[in-house]
Image (cartoon, rainbow, N blue to C red; front, top):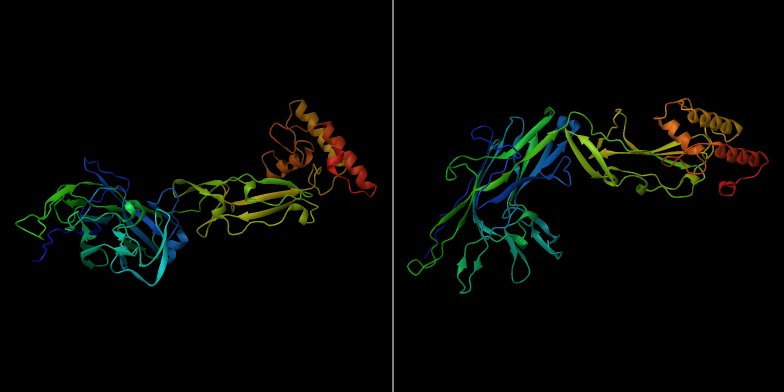
Length: 439
């Protein structure tokens, strides 16, 4: 006897025909299942927020493709039927036919290795989706399903009904779709591309689920599970008995920023004779960016294409020098708060060179004594003639403070001037003085 599949689902991508849920809206229900849109490829995707994707104006000007996935983020016992509608609250972006993926139609030409959520590594020609499993031979199988689709430039209409062919204790087939690896949020349900046409202006473009008051209306968003089982009068038949579950839905946002991301990172000062290697660990492990109206916290090392090698002593430094490792976000240069290129900076100079003229001599000692006298009387003082907030003045203080190396609450005094005079005198006799012995 033929099995009757009366369950169906529809996904509909529209621009204005239905009401789109704002990207951050969430519905509450006693039987809630969370469904979310996540950015997966293209632009920049923050590690801590995969529901947003940032695109630079340069990328938008040349056109760009962004790849999204649909995920379940809770683990109900069954989720056999899904009706999902996805809407855009703008007319600029487009749905692309070539970017739509589902488990049956996407296979690699050769098997690839994947790491399961339990840590095991396996090979498969199929991309892992949340509806899938390992069979008794340890081979990955995507879920079987009935699937129809009609894809246009601005819409996607599809129906699906998943079945992993599970058996009960009596060997009867049970139409339930267990999540692959019991981890619903680790693998996508469906995937699609959104196109940013060339010249799309800066702004925030929500990609949202669509709902209606009636969850049975075509085009609405809902999840349903079939609680029926075969009976003696209808062996092998599956009589539809829907248990509608209103989903919590979370959309995504495409953010095209109208200016470069910004950050300020304090520089690092080093002595020219220092043999300690340059290290990314000299700087904060995380960088806070302001971008597209949001604040992003990123790993600093992920913003660098290159970093300085060696140490200060490898270079012949006389006058103060600056070494820069510039920062970028997915190819977009990062700026500081002054609009200049942001970078990890090493400022290197001769220890004792209080006025940053490239020499360590009696003039430096004199500058320090004047500075100490003025600050002692409550006056504003400067070693270089510049404001104390400038890098030049900060470096000068670091070089002049011969005992505490410019640490917090450090002061310049006659002792620093005296050490510099000793160093300059030894240097004048042709020796190579060692600061550790002068201290």
